[in-house]
Length: 89
Image 1: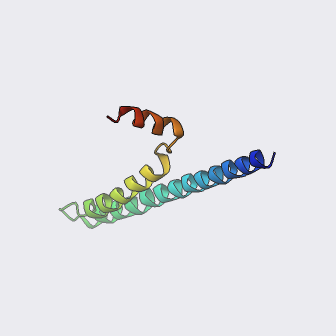
Image 2: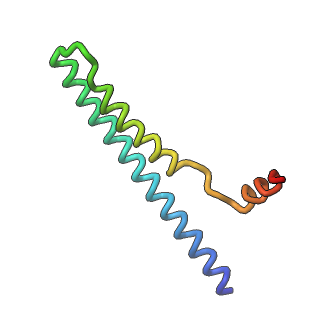
């Protein structure tokens, strides 16, 4: 019975961690959109010819991409490990 309780506690802990990561990602995405919208607005209102906001958009976008990969990639499971082992020579 104790092992089952420990397993449930571990699953709960993992679920909480995943939910926190998702929440942090959505906050990150919201900040990205709002801040970069402000930067593009400043660019537009100043009449600058060269679209310089491309630099913060791209730089921060790369970070956001890797944050999304960390949050939404599939976790390793015993099934995935087994299938990979079967592919090995």
